[in-house]
Image (cartoon, rainbow, N blue to C red):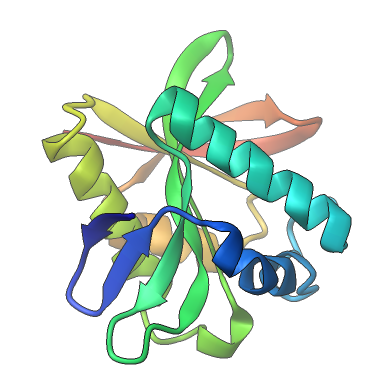
Length: 166
């Protein structure tokens, strides 16, 4: 099911038909440079179930980033419930296949999610959790108007917390 649309992209719920695409993304070492590890096929299937459960329970999750002109799966982007420093937050997160880096797809997908958060969900602000050395994600956040707010421990690593307030 389509969630939102941008100039060049659709963001849609990720179904079983996209498991192979998701598994390839989650196994990509370049994409996961700043993550603890890549995932194998079984872990990717489990991750798909987590994504689907979040969508069902929260109404938000990671969504597939699909290029309109050829329906190619480019990665995942979405809105996720997180608890940072004992405060419930909504995070915009993104992972784009490295084959498509440098084309603005991550920025465009994240911008679509921010617009969705503001206009459809009526959320006051959105964060992005980024490891300081992940300069590509920092650029995406800054291009979309998020600014560095603070540092916070998340999953055992110190992250920069970027925020945009609507």
